[in-house]
Image (cartoon, rainbow, N blue to C red; front, side, top):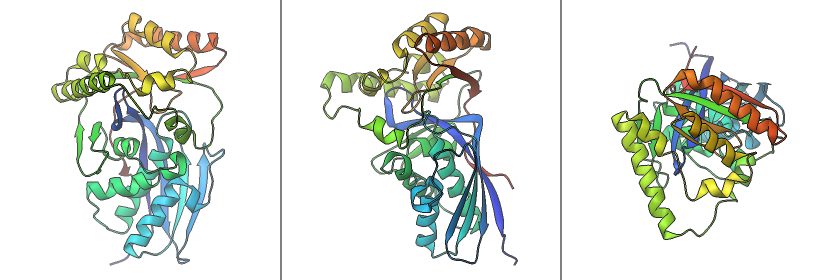
Length: 312
């Protein structure tokens, strides 16, 4: 049988945490993605070419999210070399899982190209390893959302238990993205803001929020999902790094948003609504509040989407 020489995979953007689910919750985002073409080569090495949003992204395999994933998979299965052409559609440093999108695409692409038949847990392990390039450590929340789609819950201590929930109908997403300067390895810096010691009462409150978030998605209760988008631990630690965050959250909830929180490590802010007619007011709020803090911004509207997949 003739071997497939190349394959193209798509890895969607994602939003992690959703409030209290630090390193445990993530969603995939529809219509915002990286596309990676993976081709076999005869050099037993890995070459990388970045297209699209490529500024500041290394092409050295050991410093590149997709490159690290490829290194680990090729080594594990004693495979030949590959060439990666990465078309970046997910902006880096914005809390939208840019590195995870590439990692997920490379993982599913290599799995298909070499007929590896990886389990979900294996896919998560390899994709998470690529996050070392951006965060300095392997972590699996964004890559879980990007890999599997929907609302994903993982056991971050083992990465073996993975559950994905389909979103309820008419759950819409509006994300405000301030045009702040992107910083290399921004996710790693954001993780350093998280307190090493927390109050017992705050941990109890966060467990309550996280439990209700899972209950909301499992029952399709959009209002419960929105009310659960809160966090007493990570959100307060990171909120001061995001322009006008507290004011924006308060005003969006007054407008009628179901819930508002930081998208991943930020600086993007994600809001849920069950009414598309609120989009103009939400967009205006984002634009006005970021502007008052001295920042231009962009706003995207989307929904929870599918996971990474081979497209050709």
